[in-house]
Length: 587
Image (cartoon, rainbow, N blue to C red):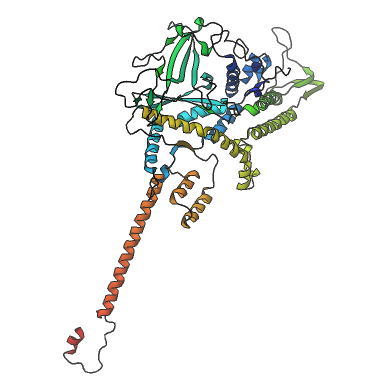
């Protein structure tokens, strides 16, 4: 390979694969079915990378290599190591749970709440109800597994008039084709979601391609009469009151027959005169439908922080893919060696072989339990011992697993291959998990802004749909809060919280938040704070009542001592007692 053929891009770590060598042209080994393709040539390497990674996830890397010309790869043993690495990294990324958190909502239950705290708490409650209805946790898991495996994932929002809420869908990143303009800095102004639909002979449908396009453009149509958001020469959106905008998002959903496409008619150049536009359930044709929003409701999630000038993420398997190939080859060799170890190769000398009466030829001997072979006086039997080679191969498997754990930064402790006896203390385990902490921190940082953007779009779709309870005004910042990815020492955290709160250096809200982060089963921090305060007030009231009762008893005892109602302090005179003395003593 000369320097002119050397390609260095976001997927150059796959250049050693034969299917990537000619992935930039139709009819290649990566896409033999695309003899005449609508996919832009610059996107074929990305789609080929997704195909390779999906093959590793499904234990089909050997089949993919065989399709590239390596026929011996069909015998490759794949035992799920790639999928295990992906699922392990995904589990640490997600943690035990995820929650929607709006900034300032945690101060709503304080004795003197900060300005805007009640509004933030109300928005947080509505967003959490939306998340429950839209199965956000399930959707996040769908999207994040694709992101960890392939490097990218896509979420799409849409307003549903029947449900009166935004709906959320997850798409395969192979369907995602953003169109970056010269003026686009952070987000593309045009996005395609496109995929092929196979032919259905029973239904009489031919092979076709479907393309869903979101595009920002100027407002050309007149606003409806009586629309409070309408303004001369533009539109006022409810999330930016007082500001006129001339930008809106248009939706187009159409299909093309593959046989109608000619060479050069790629995704951006599909002939609109041959398009068949889809129709919404209410009869509206989806041809540049005005969505009445000024943003593209598509969120692209990258697994890692992209390099400058790039927007695509990198798979967790990217840096260790060749090590996974080595591991599969070693497993294949180990399987072959274990066959000869369990059923060894035996050489016989001077043996009397049984004769098949039908053919008169000697029968083949089989190594099995209970077999008896007759040997002559000088007979000898030798067995080939391959157990040392098998032990060496197993040691190599352990070495490769350690290398994969280290280079992927999931670590041996994270993968669960580190024995407990090798960890002398919790501090040593903390150091062993250091690379994993950095990896998860980087992955969560790459997603922080994208989920903030997702919740901003949800709020604005509610406002655009004029849903009940969503008034006009600026959208509040919300984020996805992740649970700790590794176990924490709950006892140490509890002791620290009790001391700090008792000393008055931590507020109750901060103390509860620390316990929540440590993994204590607290469903809602604000409700927990309210319960703690209610219980403290109740206990304080009980103590005050007991103190008041004690004071009353003490006062009663003191009054009795002062008026001499008891026997103490009464002295009877010595000698003869007169008849009037009892009366005077009673006084």
